[in-house]
Image (cartoon, each protein chain N blue to C red):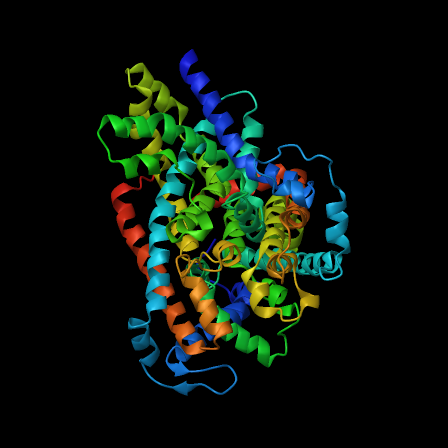
Amino acid sequence: MNDRITLREQLAGMAFAAPYLIGVAAFLVFPLAMSLYYSFCNYSMLQPPIWIGWTNYRHLLTDHAFHTALWNTIFYAAISVPFTLALSLMLALLLNQPTRGQGIYRTIVFLPSLVPLVASALIWQWLFNADKGLINSALRPVLHILGKAVLAPLAAALGAGHATMESLRHLSPPVWLGDPHWAMAAIIFISFWGVGQTVVIFLAGLQDVPQELHEAAEMDGAGAIHRFFNITLPMLSPVIFFNLIMGIIGSWQIFDVPYVMTGGGPGRSTLFYSMYIFEAAFNQLRMGPACAMAWIQLLIILFLTVLAFASARKWVYYA
Amino acid sequence: MSRKPRLLTHVLLLLAALAYLAPLLWMIDTSLKHEVQAVQVPPVLIPHPVRWQNYVHVLRDPQFDFSLFARNTLIIATLSSLGAMLSSSLVAYSLAKIRWRGRGLVFGIVLASMMIPFPVFMVPLYRIFRELGWIGTNLPLWVPAFFGIPFFIFLLRQFYLTIPRELSEAAVMDGCSHFGIWWRIMIPLTRPALLVVGLFSFMSAWNNFLGPLVYLTHQSSFTLSVALQVYQSRSGGTSYNLLMAASVLIVAPVLILFFLAQRTFIRGIATTGLK
């Protein structure tokens, strides 16, 4: 076959790609340019945009709510991404063991990732309910016994004061969504529930790890832990990398669960980046700052992805 | 494997299964309880008596027209999955099987655009849709699907690349056009992959929350996700047994769809992680 591209092929290629080419222009390039332009404007959607230069960006430097949203999102991503990765990998290893009912276990772990996030938010809001939720109903007696029978005597033996003893005797579970720190913890916790798709991708990756390598290593007397770190982990590194990138992109856009479950509260403790953009744009009609924040978000995600790709050379192993 | 690790595996699997299943079971459990029993402390595990009326109550609620919201959601989900299947497979065919100048660039754009967060488009798209008079209609939620979804283009392209070249070349020799090859060879040979695209886009439209929240303005056009949020936050608050019943009604179709197409699903997700 010759290497020249015939006109016929060129036209056919463009014709087949036409939907996307039009889509790129209408729904990608044009909106990107517009949002970049708006980010330098005073714009309420009701009046035409007015150019104000870097003002929107400068104001973000002193916008406390923005700082809170940025910090909350960084915190959430920094905890949620590595822990969901580790958890999904462990679950995948577990579900890869030949056991009875393997198919059922796999299905059960996968199911929650299909649940619409609005429904997830409501289910967990109910589970985390401070007075009547299932979680605290289970924690209360456990903490009660733990405090009275273990911690208080222990503190007494160590010579603790009366006040400490009393508080240990009356340990109570957190109020979760009513407490700034525990509300964040709850939202991170919910991200662990939806790892099903990541687990399935890891499981697929595990099927590609050559069995001969494991057998050969076992013959040489390598233990299970040794084999995991020297065979499974390197062979799986491209899949880990893929899931890491997806995790970064997804975690920076978290919206549905906190919006429905806490509305950003208490205070602004669970106000996340995308929620603040939404609030600025559609509740306050401040389209300029909303677009500026969206562009910063895009650049942060881009930066983290490039960083991940750069680091990939050091730890991702392509067979 | 020796006996001890096997026992440990079983225990860990049981614990994981319990942790992942419990929230769903508790949702169903609460949905079948009486309002008073639902909030009893310590919690009652088995609903007594079982109150199926909760579901009737949700379905008949004059302020929460479930069947209307279900219909709205179904229409959007069906149209977007049709659009995604049609457009993404055409574009993927072009990128995988036709040699033309610029296809490398287009593929690069496909990959890069997957990274762009939705909030960047939110405001300008709102403006565009407003100029078109689409705000308040369901058009913004399914028309874009007809212009190719990057993730699905990527997925189908990977599938099409695995179809041997000789097959399409032989067809060209026989005077078959690209459209003929796409329709008669590619579509039938990659039907499972196309089904994956259809299923995924259906579910993501079903689950989508932010899109409808931004572009739908009248309650009569709401999708189930947005309606459920409104149901929760409406004045006076909705009691948890009814809220969970409504949640079951939204979760159930997705789970049923999953059980009907389980193998397609798992295969589809598994392929996304491959290089």
